[in-house]
Image (cartoon, rainbow, N blue to C red; front, side, top):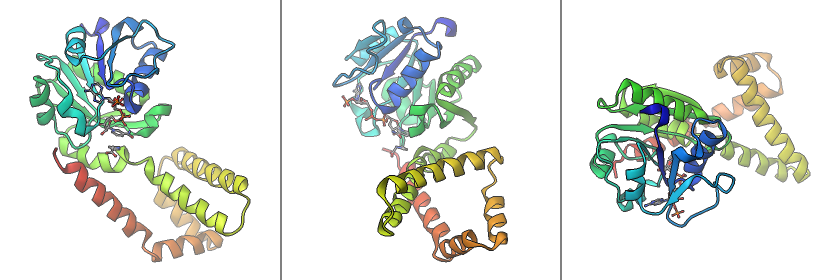
Length: 263
Ligand SMILES: NC(=O)C1=CN([C@@H]2O[C@H](COP(=O)(O)OP(=O)(O)OC[C@H]3O[C@@H](n4cnc5c(N)ncnc54)[C@H](OP(=O)(O)O)[C@@H]3O)[C@@H](O)[C@H]2O)C=CC1
Ligand SMILES: O=C(O)[C@@H]1CCC=N1
């Protein structure tokens, strides 16, 4: 069935929905005939793919599709009127357990997955958890569909997904906050705006790529630069003494608390 499964993407014009839908088409994972999307107010994300079917009625989508991906905001789940009759459902919703999705759509074959904003450039971290009713063949399909947008990883405990919602799901916003704060300071110091932007972006992107290349041990880099005992060490010590780590932990705890709240 999976070789020619039709995928129905509820909320397919939204940020995460169109990131996935376009990745599947552009990577040849699905032919346009095998993708059905639904939306509330329309959109033109699939203008280059006229054979993708677009519907407004989620019941019609559930009939056409073998696999249903739910990509609406959590507060909109109640408005999704679809009876999927035991089909595989992949939910991207934060704050919504497998059990809640199952009782809403009428299938216990539920996967919960957590993308992040970098799905848009196919660099998301995309952990997922499958309820026991999901078969091995389903799991292979889920892995293939999700890794089209980055690194997909199956988890063995659903609660880890609540934490990862705060850590990696919300995660791309954290370097954005750091960039904003660095930019504010550079402007205050009178740096030309173009130079300030270029300096901040190049530094954050370059620093992240360097970390990735060094196999992601940030502690080693921090320690090495503190031992260097130059200007960087002075900046790092002031940030650490000023409570940067505690503030980051508080932010993660606050996001985790909300992510663990069931709707
Ligand atoms: N954005 C992010 O960075 C992340 C998002 N998520 C999760 O992904 C999910 C989707 O988020 P995101 O893509 O950002 O949200 P968006 O608001 O960008 O997209 C949601 C889409 O769902 C559509 N929609 C709402 N109700 C229905 C319905 N009944 N039938 C069909 N379509 C409907 C909306 O249409 P309309 O605009 O017309 O109302 C909209 O296009 C959320 O549950 C969120 O928790 C998870 C991690 C990261
Ligand atoms: O902010 C949110 O609720 C969603 C889930 C994680 C990232 N975006």
